[in-house]
Amino acid sequence: MLLELTQMASPYALSCAERVVAYFAKAMSSRVINSWLGICSPLINYKTVHCAFQAFNNVSPFIKFAHFTSNQALLEAFHRRDRVHIIDLDIMQGLQWPALFHILATRMEGPPHVMMTGMGSSMELLTETGKQLSNFAKRLGMSFEFHPIAKKFGEIDITMVRLRRGETLAIHWLQHSLYDATGPDWKTMRLMEQLGPRIITLVEQDLSHGGSFLDRFVGSLHYYSTMFDSLGAYLAADDPNRHHIEHCLLYREINNILAIGGPARSGEDKMKQWRSELAARNSFVQVPMSSNSMAQAQLILNMFPPAHGYRLVQGDGTLRLGWKDTSLFTASAWTSHISR
Image (cartoon, helix red, strand yellow):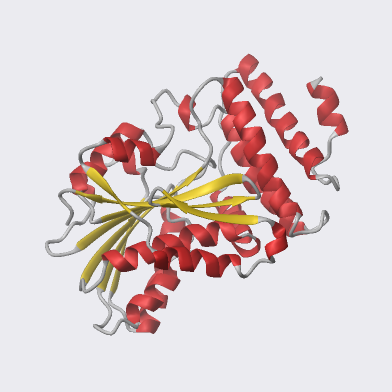
C-alpha cells in the first residue's frame, strides 16, 4: 500500500490533500526502512532549512505572529531597563530581532545596552547571524554584544551564559519539529529555573510529540493537512516558494516526527506542552499576553486577505493563531519568581 501511495501521490499535485499524502507516504516509507536498517537521522543542511524558514516567513503570517507577539512581550518586560540580555534558544538567521532593535533604539528614555546569546548547531552560521545583527544595531546607534553558543540549551551549564549584574534577562523559544534544538527537556527546564529570567517568551506548535505512534500520526496528519491548506490558499500549485517550503520545511518536520521518531523518541522524556509544565511549577508564573500583543498579531493578519481563513484567538493569557477551526501556534509569556 505504501508503495502504491508513493507512486500515485505527487508533491506537485494541484490538490493539497494529495501533496500531504505524498509526503506522509514518503515519511512512512523511511520509517519502514529505518525499522529494518536501524534508525539513522540524515544530516541536516542548516542553510537549506534556514532558507526555507525565511521563505515561509515571507508568505505566511505564522512566523511573523511568533516574532511580533514575542517582541511586544519583551518590550513590556524591558520598560525603563537600561541593560537587557536575550537568550534565543534557536536563533537561526535572527529574523526576529531587527524589528525589536528598531523599537528599542527609538525609546523615549533612550536605547538599552543589548546582550544577545544566540544558540544553534553551527558556529559558522551563528557568527554570520551575529555580524548581521551587530551591523544593524550599529546603524541604529545601539550598544550591542553577541555571544554565540554552538550547543543545545539543555546541554550547557549556567557558567556558559555570560550573566552580568544589573541586566534584565529574557529567554525566547520558538519551537518547531525540524530537529531537537534544545536537548533534554528536564535539563532545559532546570537551567531556566537557575537563570531566573524576567520574561520567557514561548511559541509552541499545537502538535504533540508524545503518546503512541498512532496518536502522533493522526495528530500530525491533521496538523500538516491544515498547514498545507493554508499555503494552498495563498500560493499557486506550481509556485516554487510553496514547493520549497513544503519540501524543505514541512516535510522535514513530518519525517522527523514519523520516520526518525521526533524529539520524543530520543531516549529522553519530552514535555507534551511546555506552557502546561511551566504553569505546574512553583518557579514560574504566567504573564498574560497584553492587548498590545493582540494588536500586533492583528496587524500581521491584516497583511493577508481575510478570506484566506486565518483565525486569531485570545484566551487563558495566550494568543493562538490557526487556519479556519484548527489552532496551529500558541504564544505565551512567563516570568520567574527570582527574576533578574
